[in-house]
Image 1: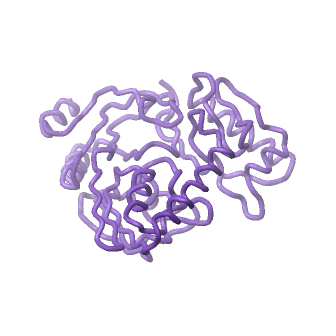
Image 2 (image 1 turned 90 degrees about the vertical axis):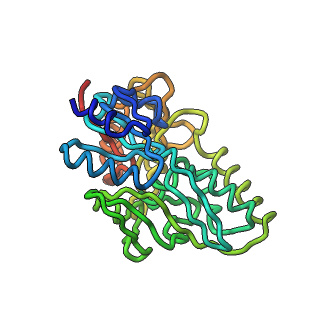
Length: 301
C-alpha cells in the first residue's frame, strides 16, 4: 500500500518499483529494491524523507554505487539515487556542485576552467555525494583537502550545512557515515592554475590507473582499507591469492587489491571471496584486513 501512496504523493518524481539494482551498481550485482527514487532537487529529498519517516519506511541513499555491494536479496524499502542532481556553478575559485555530478565530469570541467586541486580525483568512480561520504582519495589527495562546506538534508528532513572541520574527516571516513544525513551540495575551494599543466597531470594519473587497475572488468574499486604499516594489495599478492576465484568473482591478476566480476558473479561470491582473502592473509601475515567496500541489503532473495 505504501508504494502506491508514494507514487500518488510524488507524481513528478521518477519512481521505479521492484527495480533490479544490478543495473546500477559498478559490480553488476544486487537484487531488487522495493522502490527506486530519483529526486531532482533538495526539496524533493526533504519531502521524501518526511514522507518516509512518517510512514516508517526504511530508506538509504546510493550514489554511483561504485564502492558498495548490494546483496543478492536486494533492499527492502526505498533507495534514493541522486544522479539527476547535477547542477554545477563556478565562481572564481569556488565550485558549488550537487551530489549527482560524477567525479570524472567535475574534474574535467574544473580543469577547463584552469582550476587546480582536484586532479587526484580524475579517475575515481562515483559521484560527488559518495566521494564526500567516503572522503575519497587517490595519489596523495583526498576530498577533505579541497572541501569548504557540505549542505545536507538530515534524516529528520531538515536543511543543514557542515564546515570542513565539522565533517570530522578521516581515512575513508566522514561525519555523514554516523549521522545518516543526505549530501545534496558540496562547496569546494580550488586554486588558479595553468590548464595545460592540470590536464597533463590528469593524463599522467589516468595512465597510472590504466596500467595498474583492472578497469576492463566490473568491480567495487579497492576492496580493503590500507592496514597500518602495510598495503592490502601487496599482502594479498604475497599470499599468492591473485587469480583466486569464487563463483564469478576473482582477485584481480592486475592489482590484488581489486576483486573483479569476470563471469556473472554475485554479491554472495564477493562476500565469500572477501572472507577467504581475509582468512588467508591473517593466516600468513597476522594482519586483519578491514573492508573499505560496504555490503547493503538483505541476505537472501
